[in-house]
Length: 78
Image 1 (spheres, rainbow, N blue to C red):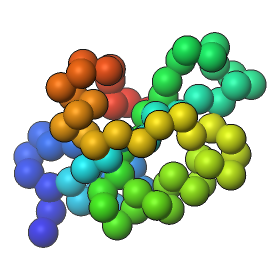
Image 2: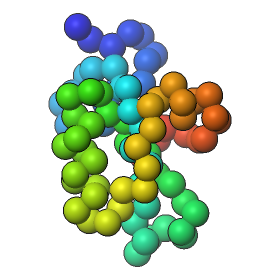
Image 3: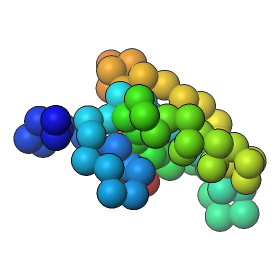
Image 4: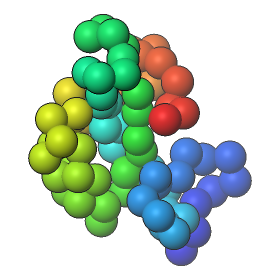
């Protein structure tokens, strides 16, 4: 089953599933400490994307998409 029209999609390569999670990250070599970039993840890819960012020391937070949106935390563009 594909995502609903205009719904946020998972950032994993080739995945078209609805996003459920927001992975907030920061590359300290490129971004100021308070800056947060985001990737979106479906249930299937949350762990994989988290590990990818985590081993590089980039991952800062993993939040359910609905909580991220309700707190007005920011854009989903990575």
